Image (cartoon, rainbow, N blue to C red):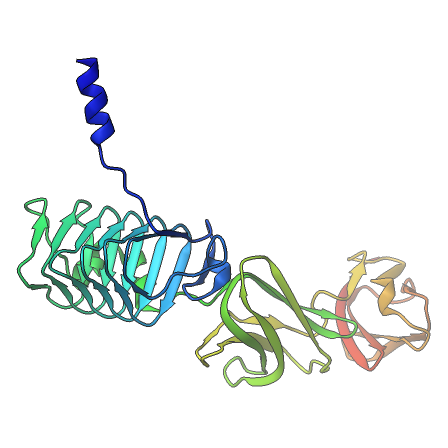
Length: 354
């Protein structure tokens, strides 16, 4: 009995591949980019022979994929195909993660497609070969075409675009747009002595040519004021900054326009800054015998301070480095401090209480 077991084990076939390709874990990248793949060599987009391709991160292919021979494509994470996906020969497609095909998916006569994850075909799914739809989460936006193949297990079927939008609206929205070329970590705007400082960072970039920094004085009509070169493709934190030296006459709005190498673009959320925001602070408030201005770095020898009462009358004026201003001689009530420094004007209100 032991001898028979040994013989059976010895005769069990072992699959070997002429080449194997694995994308880098948890990394976003293009199919054609060397940095996307362990070992630095991307697989061809027209596969023949006996190779294995494993998707461990988020990979985007711009164009059609033709998979043939006795090869395997295993999707553990996410594959986005901006084009058609053709399975020919004895090719095996195994989806354990997410597959999005913007064109057609054709399963050839001897090819097989096993779905344990979620697969979204935004055009036609045609199948002459076998589809094993174990998760029952294959969605085709047009009616599937049976070219002599089969779908198992019995009772599972190909669902529609409407099914996807109803059952999984988050995934539907994800599949509605191209994969985001840039993962924006933060985008902030703050007023400084030099002007409005804009700071942003990306966690990943895909095909990113540049950012346009855009400004608006009403929140609708935007003008490009700077162009900042992007990193192209990146999977590390990249930080950017730009300072707008324009004196703020009122509230100002900013946004980023991210532009790909193929001139596709997307906009960030808005940030707004008002005069004196995040730069001038007065202590204490209410004040009794003095008011102190922060930060000290704002003040120069030519800085002028002027205090106006609630009637608009100037009641105090001082120039120089001193940031502690005497107010004990003034009546209680609301006052306004005007600060003129380095070509900028800041206005802050404060209360006097005796």
